[in-house]
Amino acid sequence: MRRPMLAQPCRTSRYRDRKAWPRGTVDSVPTMITPATAASQTPHEAIARVATMIGAGPVLVTSDFDGTLSVPRMDPWAATILPQARRALRELAAMDDVHVAFLSGRTAMDLSTRVRVGGAEYLGNQGLERGRLRRRQAPGSLLVVPHPAPERAWIMSRLLEREVPRYVPEPWLIVEPKGPAVTFHYRGAPDVAAAAVRVADLVERLDPQGDLVRFPGLRSLELRPHGAPAKGESLRSLLDDVRPGIAFMLGDDRTDAAAFQVLRAARDAGEIQGLAIAVGSDAAAIEEARPHADIMFQGPRDAARFLVLLCRLLAAASSVAAQSK
Ligand SMILES: [Mg+2]
Image (cartoon, helix red, strand yellow):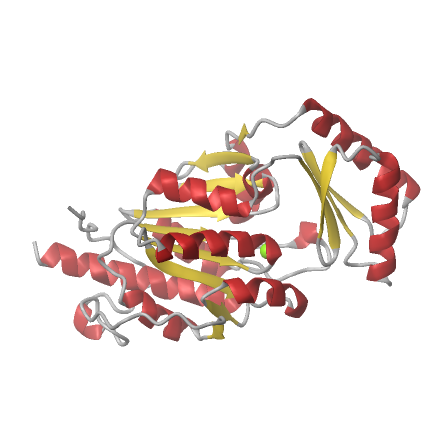
């Protein structure tokens, strides 16, 4: 027995009633066609597809942060969430039967203080740590539960955080400490390829036994404990916890592709409906994510627009459900 969503206000909504809803209706259910590769779509085109899913049960909205809800910056510490996305996510998180989660390579605390959406789950370090921020709770007071990691991973991460900048004292090297993991960013280097080789060689010298697993990115090198959950496993745990009828995953790079694959496998198994949405903020990064997604947006502003439209759609569907009681 599916629970109807309760009527909820949606401050972003101009379409509060069913008649005013301009694209699709909550009771038109055309067949969803999944393209062989992710087609570039507008937020309105995507939301027309979502309208066909309404009524399938609770909704889970999971999003990456960097390059998905924020425009990429040279300095990772300068990244900020698009205000439109934050407003929409706050309203979504306040709705009954809508669950919002953030899944990022950043620490959960860093993520929560940048996103600042209450009533949501924060899965930091790709799921190595997790916390739930209550509504109106200060992001800095997020209680973070870490995933167990070997002691040697913690020790090696501290060593690398200290030693790599000592041997590479260039201003372009940015160190992101993440508990038992660490990421070295070099997107600001004049020669990114040379910087990647230099950092990777140094890590090999400092960690010859491979206490940490190397995850080279396009402009960064991440070191993580063996057996640590990544975004695929983390989305799977969210699906198991929330048991949604509809799930969305928004992301922009290869780490998000693993979550896209999990979402699509769950959909293929008949467990959920939903969409894996690649956000094309970086041409090189998106080429690794796009083959695993259902659709692609042109960038974070389209992702934010989609979230606003999703908020409106769910508010309209909720209103219809309440009126039909
Ligand atoms: Mg990203």
